[in-house]
Image (cartoon, rainbow, N blue to C red; front, side):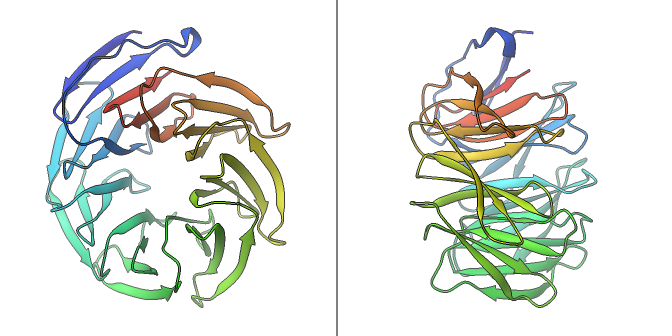
Length: 307
């Protein structure tokens, strides 16, 4: 299908993947979109922007919501595992929880002393982990909004973090070129993964045993959790790799970059399978659904859905 509709902070376009083409609609606003994420049932997309708003896009209707409450740039947002809540994180030092159905703010998590750069729900949805430029990782109880643990990463800023699938550990990455694995029960750092030659921007668990990261060094790397050793390197992007995700069947890595492209990689061979072009500026974030629809956003203030 080829269609598009505009709302305040961006244009959203639906694109045929097989044609590798997109019809874009220009919309003149100052702030770009920082992040896009599918809901667990893939019926909705949440987007965040520098205009201090979140938007929930319903894929089956035009019943879209605008969520307001943050007082500064929103760095990103994530759905809870049951799809009923959204956690957003911002330069206003807070994480905010929202009810998806009503769009109402449920509570505000306060404790970080500066820009919150990442926040993720635990696999069971009971906990949130957040990372910040204040060089801490904090764990929060979702039901009561109380901080339950603080892990200091001095002198390293947190760029991104994610829970392991079993919820027992956490992985974080930093501009110091490293990736760190943490034991959640003790709060202790288990190991440091070294290999990237520039800032590590995003990191995800492939399984409890493997991690994938992307970096300003233009590479994507896969790591063994137990040994901390690099297993594979994926190269082809011409600029910073700003986002990375894994297909549901775990056979394909999807990445986006400041080189204006999205690339699909075969996880076994390490070879590039497809290159999706169409963005006029840097691609800042992406997500992938079980049926391999890809949603991405960038500095051109456009969200594209490839499917």
